[in-house]
Length: 158
Image (cartoon, rainbow, N blue to C red; front, top):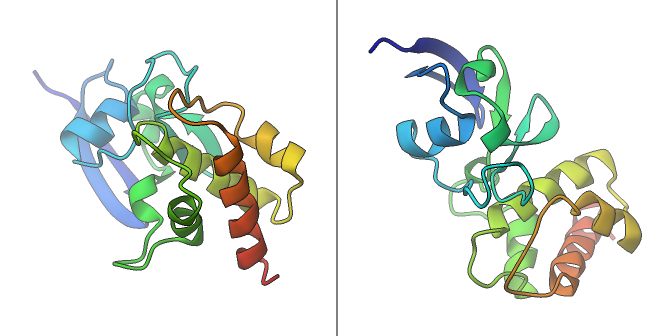
């Protein structure tokens, strides 16, 4: 069966792929492009495990069709690190043990990246609100919030 040809930018690289009309961007990223960071937790946009940034907007990739990425800019967790050098948020998640099973971690990282891009000095309440679309079943949210606070301080040079 023929697919829809899509030309897009993912993590700074020009990418072309074919997808089916009903195929989600999450499925394209994972199954066609091998970018397995985004996870399917619920398939309904409620858990945030599949969060990506699409044209500077945080979205659940399970709610976006693969064809909708045509001509757009997609950022995934795979694009955060630069080679072996982790993004500050990734490093702080490790230092604060802000992860356990890892299913939700990529979504939290992308949501935190989006938050800090828009608000480099968020309060604890703003962090909790900014991450509210992401659910974690393994750990408390305090370590995640502390990791984001620490990363914000490092990123703003405090």
